Figure 1: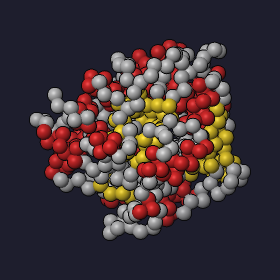
Figure 2: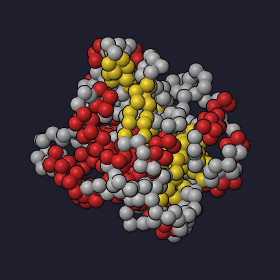
Figure 3: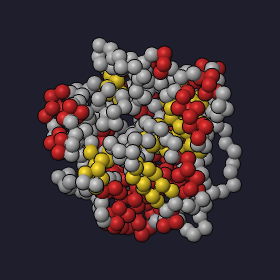
Figure 4: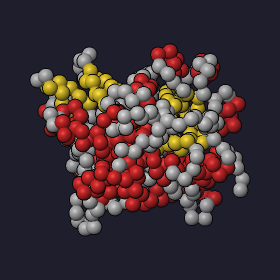
Length: 480
């Protein structure tokens, strides 16, 4: 199999602008690559980022769409593996034909079939390689991968595949990512790595393991990527800095899109949104004293100069990239959201119950989406992707459980029906938003609260759209 081995390090400037790693498939390789190329064009330090969420499902969908870039990258990974996966997920030419799905990631815990577990690992390794490999083509800027701590099942194979493609940085949020640095170090030294999953209701853990020597040449030494922890508070930054190797921190505020940290108080406003107070505000002086670069995130678009003046290295920007031409969001949805932003009618709510993770989640209130109560109530609940499941013991055997799965199934597994009220299958809803045909749920959309840059770039454009290059130029105040 292909791997990009560690070479003599070439010192590159630390990025001032980080593109948000939005999933599922919004921050795809095309967006990350476009950001990287724009940074190179303007000679500015940027980091293009691919989302590491749901990559096996994305790759097999693209294979069934006969996507030639995916096929080419898979052959770079390994021709035999490419032939195997193309045979298993052949192109679909009949619009009535159903797209095949990969195994659910939970098979790594619940399956008694070693061959099925190995197939899941190989799909995840290959899909991460493909995404990073394509993002890195045609330029010399750095590329990162963003993964969510809460989506733990595929961390090991995803990180290995990304490192085999030469990923430069790993960014992790939505939890406490203290296990990541050791995984990166072990894989860089061609050693087995482990990742421990919590079992609900117990102090026990499930120990997932992956030995890179099964997938690398005997003397392989992969480059160890930098690790940026995404945090909301100085307390977590200080804790991580004491216990693990961290290369930088992305300090994300509660107005950022996607998942947010829970508020430290229980108060909510009239729309049911959590109220963040003084206890939730990070002390940036304490973060600065850690001596590591840090970036501000959440309503930071257009504020690079202010961020740097305050001591930050730069900013992370997501929402404005999510609605750019190159993002993976389906065009018809992108156009609708851009229209609403220009008209000032868009509504974005911080929901405390939409995400199965229990973390607050920014949700666009959009007609025809899962925020439409009639659609939510009348749809068929499914759990066919399984990215956000947790595990509990049933008769001594670990089983998956998720409040977004069919309610009868959730109750049978011991869940309380009240916990499933208003919960959305983010796996399906977000995949639907980027147009993956095997998904059967309506879409869901997440954006940050600040959409002023989106409005500015969209309004000044003749057709209401803009490119990733336009965003990079705007953030660096470049006038062409």
